Length: 461
Image 1 (cartoon, rainbow, N blue to C red):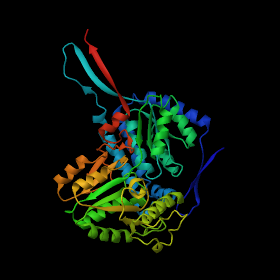
Image 2 (spheres, rainbow, N blue to C red; image 1 turned 45 degrees about the vertical axis):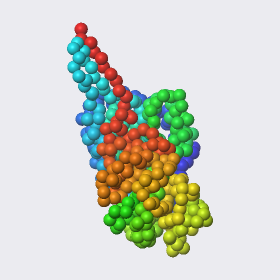
Image 3 (cartoon, rainbow, N blue to C red; image 1 turned 135 degrees about the vertical axis):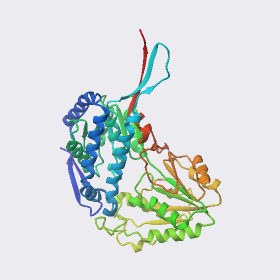
Image 4 (cartoon, rainbow, N blue to C red; image 1 turned 90 degrees about the horizontal axis):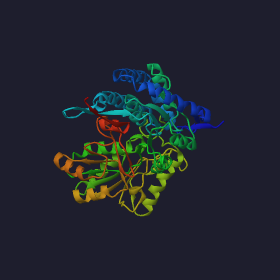
């Protein structure tokens, strides 16, 4: 019997222990999902909507409990943990609302003697592999639209946040969802791969690292089923010289440091017009120094630990390497007693005098650190922003909206923002390019990933 242990970054204690699923449970779960999906696909869209909405109601009713568990599992400050429950609700309800339009048959122009139309048919069983950093908000992107589209879902949560799957299951059960339509499995990496290769799985949604995405593609080679891959990011932002400095600092720095920078769409590279560079850095450093690193269960804490000591040490190594190569570190880590090598608590950092030869500017950091470079023009900013293996999001801060939109059109990213960052709108497609992945979730287009088109060409007798 293999046991999975969740080590809390709050204090290093074992917070949750769960038995990993064995072969018998995996087989029963797959068989149950396949069987119930055949009936579910015939259920009306109104009934699917009613049950999914009831699930959301049951889920958000436990907001305080869910937020506290999230803090202990992955370290987000309790003051911010509840926002994920709100994000889950916004995305779920948004996708429920979009389903009627997204799944409606496409009616073609009249052709004498023929009836022609295209329907969106469910794929079957969706296997969703969720990450630890936003275990509810990333999972819901696939779960709710998959079920609304007529599919069954099996969720594999991260070993760091196993309770997330159990709480979603409880909400579905409370809503009266048919047994087996939504299920979860605590799995080893090896068994997760075996599930992906199983012929009863018709779609895989994976959120995680580039390396993890490569592994998923190897498992699916030759299966000819669709997969949605949301992978890494090294997202940039550009601060033009015309901004309201105070608003720009607050917006972009929150986008860099929320959740201790542990977001696929966190701002990790920052380009500031040289005319305001010194003033921007001064205010940005002052903003970061206001962050309170500490126990995330304390409501006064605004910066919690990263997920595990190894993750903190990776970011430390990038910072140290950059400084050794000539970067300037603006924050004295000694001012943060909790931040010591081998600890999950990591002092925030702002670096200048950086360049793209440094890992801090070209490899994902996933921690509370930002590198800032001065640029002389929009053209230079665009070239540097596009100089990356990643392409998830990018942001431009400017008071000239036309100029900002023109710059955004040139940026190589799945989502581009002006005057905000680090946000998912359920009505917009969430997608990445380059090593940030492929496929799409959210929006009407997201439903296309979870269905297949079926054409009807009916000749009248």
